[in-house]
Length: 244
Image (cartoon, rainbow, N blue to C red; front, side, top):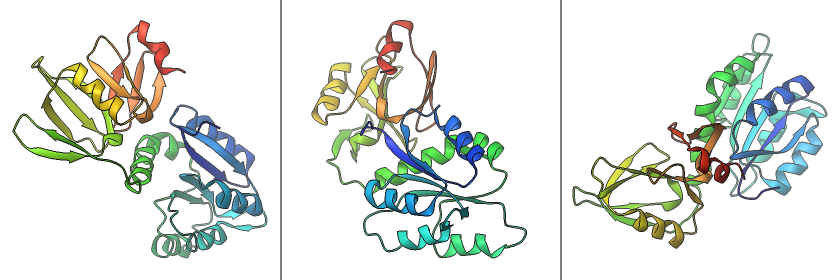
């Protein structure tokens, strides 16, 4: 398993649903499936050992239900994954939604069928999951001076990309939150920041976009989609840098 990628787990008793989720997630190369199972005991063991950053949980699973997993998560220290919870029992048991939202703080609740909902919402859901995961990390910070002479402290790991400003002497720093800061810098200065903080960046084209590979959520040649939603075109000679 590639440790650079974020992990997700699917706990669902219907094979077709698990397969459909995996197929949709294959477009998002920042994520990889660490476990898909129909069984409570397998899910519980995987949670304890691997702590995936994202959970797809169906209410009804073999050997128990996902409330039992959510109850267990309340007891685990320093582990707060992004949780997508879904069920087909809302008409019979409307109290389910109230319980999971009020007690277990589930991040996203979906009533079945979920296929079209995932197709429409997965971009935004994964962006939220990424931000939740990174907000818990303690990192070194970078001080920058904007062209307005403001001193700003940022987490360098949350830089989605550097891109060229209209003024050739300036570069724009784009964060995963969508916030942008324009600074006076050369491409060499940007590369020094990347090296200093051991980040994994590549140029998407002839020094117009310099992209953090960690924040790519989808690839479809010749385009990359970044965590904040930005779509960037990659030149033919640079594409291989992003498919490894």
